[in-house]
Image 1 (cartoon, rainbow over the protein chains, first blue to last red):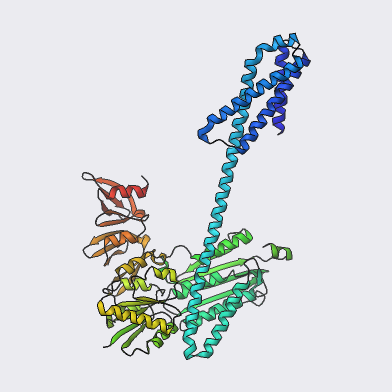
Image 2 (cartoon, rainbow over the protein chains, first blue to last red):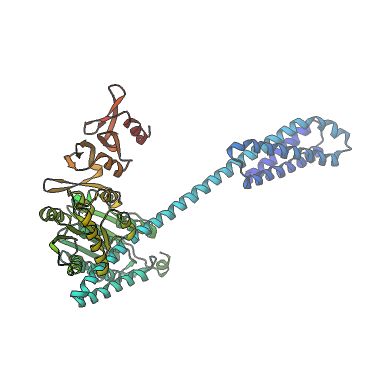
Length: 343
Length: 247
């Protein structure tokens, strides 16, 4: 804005000087310059405003040219009329200014045109930036919807299989069936009540993971065993709700659903100087894993969630040792009560 | 008349449900229970059952992939926790599918449907079914083949090219070549066109394996692969190849 005002001021002086050189006195030159340039500012601003709301497409640049032409003509006659009102009877003024109209018109047209081109470029750029932003936002939303959909994929499958196991147990082992119904309800409740924004104690998170694993043991007890080693002081640390669930689901998917032999899934947590370190370990089938893309959905969704929470990409690491897959997560602790809510 | 029945499912409890449902049918004789597709292939060859109850999601190879490995597969009733939408694609081609958990009534319905069908046809026409199944994202990353008694899972990206060989298709990888009883047009339908292009009546090439394309005799070309193999490109195949390469 400031450079704009300065250039206008300079331009007023230049025009004044030019008119003075042609023989007008200082006062006449100043009045003329101020009147014509003030009107020109007005017209240019009008042009700028028009461009803000109506941006011609590239193929109608002729339109823009017409607008500049019409507005410049309007400006020209308005200036002429106004100066006539002031200096209509001043013979000296009239005789000098009479011959300046072609140059005035040309300069007015150039300034107007220049400002229009700048306005056109600026608003065009702005519009493009806007569209770009909207596009990124739309992509973001699609991605989130997709993540959500993927997240839901394992659940119904797991649920129906669990119900099928209960169905089988009811006839032969009713006490176990009853136990499983209770575990399943408790697990479902624990996943339902937690909102993703919430922080919980590791103890609570591990409890629902244990329920999940117990249910899988009813289905695959003949070959699934689990080892859970949690430091007592780690259990008191905080963790974003359901952060580990996809990792354990992933461990089950590759370690249990996709192997034929005995499977050991282990969970470890330690408290190292107030930070929470968690390790999930599962075997996998080397032959079938080669055909799987990447590290599987569970890992990438957790990676993304950690990034959204902490803006860090180094909190989750994976490693393969022969046929063992290890996932390590570091969870920074929220110390301030305010930070709890924010994250 | 007795019928031989096989249950293939990786969950003991799920198998026990099918067994329970089979009790009212003394004419259906359960010959074996299998834990996975590998056991399934063996048991089918050994017993030649009339009907199998087959789970879809099982370790290493899916129920569909297991069927692909069997010549003249028996009639199949799928038992699955897959969602209904996924199963509708197969409805026309399977005898029936039972969504877990299912009732005795639903089971009875599937059995009577099978009895109707088995009166008229002896062998199940599973070709269409397997073609539908192969398009399922679960299986798009690999091809399962049988070499002697061993079952080999080939990730798609490891395949160099496919070559027609009478009733079979030869799958060439760095490890060697494997035969699969299939047609070229099947693979053309099933494999992603971004990765595989049928350059010739008898050849399909993995695009990522191509290093260059040379002219060959008049109006023909050959695609030279990283492995050094020369794959014929016919006059009809050349434009397809160019299109995928974006030339």
